[in-house]
Length: 326
Image: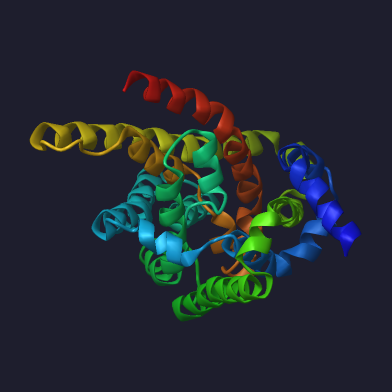
């Protein structure tokens, strides 16, 4: 057990390097690996959410929910209004069915589980991002079936009730396992095991990347033009959403500031909201849709990981520039 703990701590200490290397390396794995792992995507996602939730002190999180109305407005904009807008844009430009499905699934997915870590790295409001991420993950079984039914019902045959059940089981089991593990380990031991938890999370993320990216190099060789186009769509969908919500948020902040004598909305809060708008947990939604559609959007799911990994670099330049000018 000591050796295993040391191993996970070592992996956790090198998490950023391992994850960065996993993207190009997993692309050259044989597609057979992806085919074997694909049916277990739900379990992989449960593992990722569980490890993230183990560290969460729910009583402390609830104490930060000082403005539930503001959080509700954010969630409505992020997980209801935005996906409906994405669907309208996709229909207007008559995008390919696979891309249309992928973009709507991204837009209705909750924020990335590692979004709070990204927020701290970018010097944004980590606590706000955590609350949005947690709340978005909790309500996804209610919002996703409704949105997908409204937007993709004519393109993707699926059972809304079955999708609701799968999402509820995925999210609910993750929270339940996390609560049990927290009770078993205790708060202090969890605090001391940060590196080990980072290591476990990194291993699961590498398995997830392997599931999504195995065989991508072959697809690139067979149809490089389409893969370049798909990559461009993935980058635009991520960074485009971050930029759009940054601009809209700053405009709203400016308007509120004119009519309010209080300090108004913080720039960090606006940019935090923008950051989570682009970085979504597509894997959670993808894991519960019928496998035939999952296989279709798998190349997009793989390429979508790249702008996520580039957010600390590109987002750091953009958000750093905005924060300096406030």
